[in-house]
Image (cartoon, rainbow over all chains, first blue to last red; front, side, top):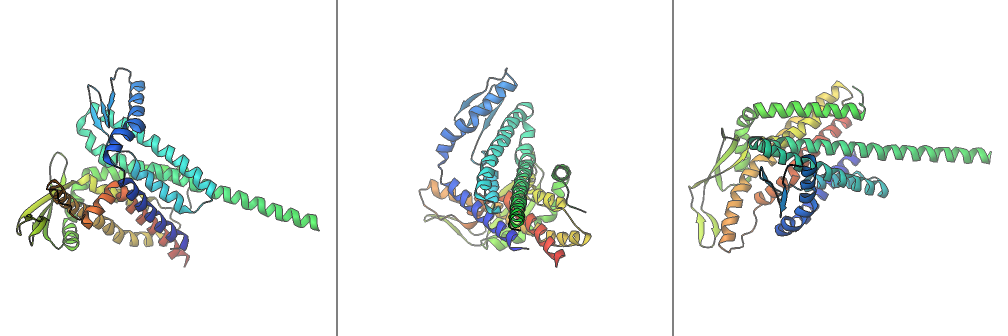
Length: 183
Length: 199
């Protein structure tokens, strides 16, 4: 294994552990009563009501409640794990500062959107057939989300390498131009 | 065996994920049953407090069940202990256990392979990695769940008990670490196989 790959694996692992530690310092009550309803719950309820206007979905703290289904958003269901993983990978990749910030912002938006789709999807799964909830929630959704986020990471790394190649070409052309002018 | 374009690679990943997920859904119990002696070995190596018996039980959601018999009395609070010889149990669903393995196998099977020689190397590294990933997820989670029970009992009694390693590790892996570990193992297998063929 080359040094860059080794450094990436070590840095990503350490950063993930640091993010996880920081996340665990946030009290459950604060997540349940403030973060989950405001950041996840209301947006999910609005999406459900837009897609299916007949659903009377309300938010009570961390719960999405309707006459047909009730779903609690708990610690870990907020997409934090996959967000930490992606952020650790982006920082550990060692791109330029601007590329890293772009990756973190775009990655955060991507993870948020994917997680909102998951939350809304899970609500409809409970509504349709409660027995399908456990396998979708604990098995299909996590692996699919990891793959989608890995896809985002792959695209981002290609973008950073393309930019690097473009700037290398420009630098070479400028050097050649300088040589020609000198001659 | 050249580097594929991202679109092709992404489609391949989705297809492999789908096939592995369906395979796990239908034949996961068989795999988990095969792995139970290994899980028992790891559980007993990770905690010398118990003799472990692990089995797969058919339920509404099929589960891997740990029956742990305490070898010695285990102190929970200053006034309360789990007597030696007592058997306690914890369980996790089979599907939950398969998640890291599916992530790992998806990476391995979709890694852009440049030669048959590299395929050989990647498979060679994948086998021990598969067991490493299994070792640091399911058995430790089963132990962590036992410890969580003790921790809750201690908290209810108003006693501040130090968090054991199995509990800390379980919280780390359940928070998303069980996704990161197979991803890093997969990347390491791919990167090492590439460096092996360059030599």
